Length: 196
Ligand SMILES: Cc1cc2nc3c(=O)[nH]c(=O)nc-3n(C[C@H](O)[C@H](O)[C@H](O)COP(=O)(O)O)c2cc1C
Image 1 (spheres, rainbow, N blue to C red):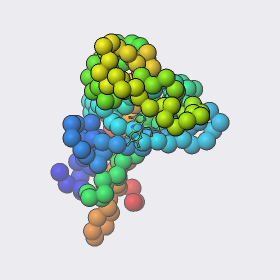
Image 2: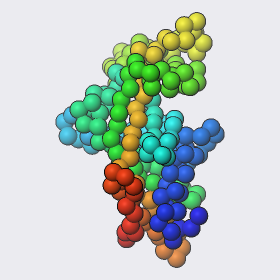
Image 3: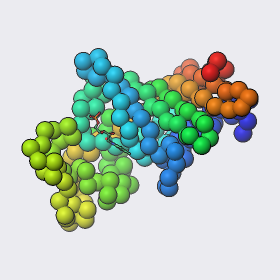
Image 4: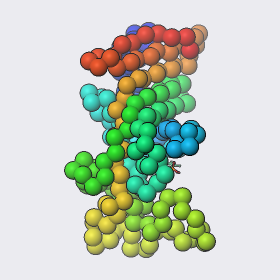
């Protein structure tokens, strides 16, 4: 892997995302996802990457279908994902479109692979962003971690699959930085160097 080879930099960018989705901690386990709100404002938030498929050019996270981002992505699926590894000095930005899976077979498969702790959030009565008179009102119930019904919360579960159309890799380094851009042309990636 060299930072002077365009194809290596694309591989590196995807390797960062794959490390993020793999078990254990990585700087890319949590990334920021930005989209456009219904009022035209930029919106961004941190999410946990749960799956990466390099061949399909996808990365996925899950969310509560009642959260504002779901409605926003239904009206405009364009997203940008950004992550940064401080130790390696590497930033990866991915542009693409989000596909939302609610109650379908892909959502069910993702639900099946999710851990009990990750499912707890989907058993809360209150929708994300809903006003609470008391902050404790939103706490998960004591039995929420291991409910008898393992499908409890699935109706609120949304599996968001982002398919990439552009990858922007930036490596900070000495004596100089490197930056490459990779655009999906429908059949392959068109790669080029750009000034950092
Ligand atoms: C470390 C961390 C990980 C998070 N992971 C997720 C996630 O995987 N999915 C999610 O919907 N929200 C996640 N959140 C919460 C979001 O950042 C955000 O607050 C919430 O989804 C509401 O976003 P929205 O109002 O834009 O819909 C995470 C927050 C933090 C700090």
